[in-house]
Length: 261
Ligand SMILES: Nc1ncnc2c1ncn2[C@@H]1O[C@H](COP(=O)(O)OP(=O)(O)O)[C@@H](O)[C@H]1O
Ligand SMILES: [Mg+2]
Image (cartoon, rainbow, N blue to C red; front, side, top):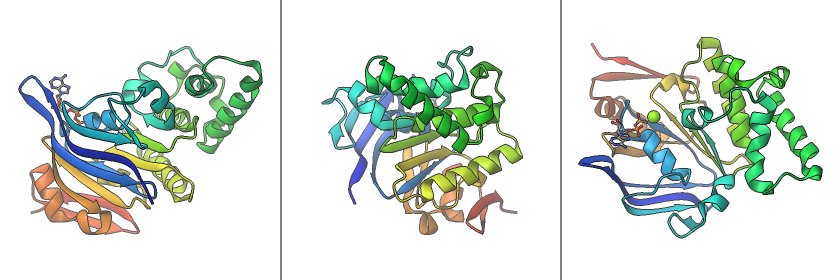
């Protein structure tokens, strides 16, 4: 067991606002974390630090045994799979789904070389198949449904065989069936022994895939609670996080919460 991500007293300040305030948090390689919190809590900010795309204003971030600020982020980033809307918005809409996945490997191979081309394409196609979107491989990314786009993005995040996988609201915008199949596939993925350490951000309890081991609850840039999911995800902690009296329900490893009456 070793730490893949360790934030030590991390704060992010923008003007007078503290996006993150003194956050400390460690993920070991066999753990799968959910970061839960209302809109504006700082979840995306935290994930951007974990993805080596944002530097803390103070405190230190250790990612995969490297210290952010003392390492070339362009060497670090291919070791991290990052699925977020911010990245999806940068994918060219006319690029095919297959290319959207293959291009994640460019950073690793450095430059386009003939012998990698076929291997990369085969791997990308396999990943699209694994995520149930093999049939749309030649469709322009911009023409895909929201659900298909999400799956392509996750395939892209997995293309470099990352040691750390970060998913920022992967279920956002999906319909019920889309959400359920995404939850099931994510659950399958993380069940593998050699799956990367994973962090999933959401504000919907229904989107927590069975098998996640830990939870961090975030509110106004501060940690409300963190620890093993079973003991940390409670009605009381949720109520503090979302500033509303909430009743938590668990059934077969799935969660939901409703306002307490
Ligand atoms: N550059 C910025 N300057 C000021 N406030 C910002 C900036 N970027 C984000 N914020 C604010 O920081 C808070 C946290 O943002 P974010 O990490 O995206 O939250 P979440 O992902 O939990 O919804 C939000 O209130 C957002 O409006
Ligand atoms: Mg966000």
